[in-house]
Structures are given as structure tokens and as C-alpha cells.
Image 1 (cartoon, rainbow, N blue to C red):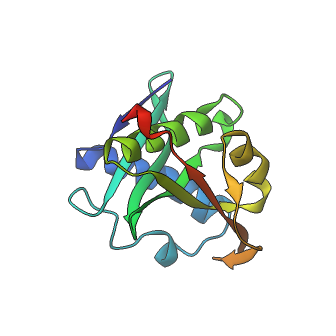
Image 2 (cartoon, rainbow, N blue to C red):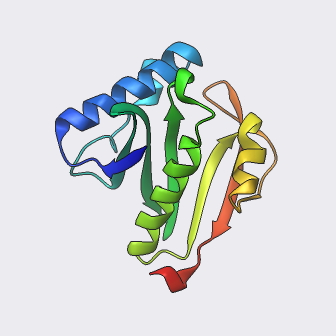
Length: 148
């Protein structure tokens, strides 16, 4: 398993395919809600693609919001869950945030994934809220700035 920063449109399209499969088809998020103005190569986001046995199976993005790194659109195709790829995605996005000099990151995690994020050092910072018909919570983490 490996990850790479997305720098070519063909890889961005692979990430979009994964997001459609997970968020739109599997979880019922409306297509028009899943994609936004940040889904470009030249935009305000850094997108990554995770491969497993040379197949693109996971993705995520990092966006800077009010000086804090926001991890977004983290997902893995269903057959590839439980291989530790979620941790790879989160750690990769944290590394990007670190290189950008950010001291904190946050995310809107689906409530069923709260324990997963807690194991990676995130702390719950909100009550449950609805996002696209799915219960979420705000989670935050302070990065180790010595790694910059």
C-alpha cells in the first residue's frame, strides 16, 4: 500500500470515482453535495490517492480553513477496508499539513468512525450534527510541530 499526492487529472478522476462509490452509492449522499469548488488540481486542497496492490482504493483531501488543516472526503472502497488504509490516509494528510506549517488539524468524522480517529490522537470537540443526512462529530488534533 502506498499513497501519492494527486497532481494529474487522471488521478483526480480516480479519486472522484472512489468518492462516488463510497459516499454517493453506498451512503446516499446526493451527487451535487459530494463535489464542490475545492475539487480541482489548482484549488485550495491537496488531494491524495491510496493504492492497494496497485489499485486505487482510497482517497482524502486537506484544505486549510482559518489556519487549521481540515481533513476531508476520507474514504476507502468497501472491499479494502480493514487493511489499515484509513490510517495511511490520515497520516498522509497530517504530513502534508505539517509541511505546510500547520499546528492543528480537524475533521468532521462520521460517528461510527469516532473510535478510529480517537486511536489516531483526535479528540471529539462537538455534539453530533447532521451532514448530508449522516451523523457527524467535529474532531481535532494538535500536530507534533517538531516533525516539520
